[in-house]
Image (tube, rainbow, N blue to C red; front, side):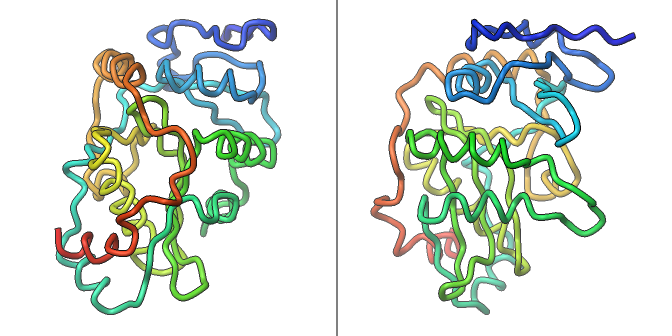
Length: 244
């Protein structure tokens, strides 16, 4: 029988030691609590994230190993550069946060549901209003063709989800995000759970103990709190991705 700790409703910043998460299912740490900003920010600062389906209790995870992108290593390959030469796309940041989250929540081929339930959408929208959650949008004229969203805590960016409506849309989004984060000395994008698509994009796996040590350092550094929509390099962002 699995025995999971129940989070204390009166202590939103308290979590069990993530090193004590279950091996099966990999990384399951605790249940309960809420999606308040204080609890979510405390979770990410400790290498923990929520992940649950609509018919499940609120579950918290810290898997081993952990999937991570190095922002310096996220550079476009030849096929992406060719793709960018064929399309007339532009990139924005924090212009359509909720649209990106809802697009990520839309059912994918072969999936009957989504873990980005309405309560999650509302919770991250609150963090966006507070200046912690951010989105990168890829547009073809006024149509959203790709995007990514996540949480910035200190100098760690915790990627939550990305989507494409056109081939290459999500790749352009994460490359643009990495370009911005490099300029601000954010070395990592936490991609949470490994899958083949993330590895193909260049993600690496780290043992949880090593990941947690780095998270503890990065989340204590001064970050970029606030809305990122005024980032001054946006006009050249897509071109700079192609030229990298």
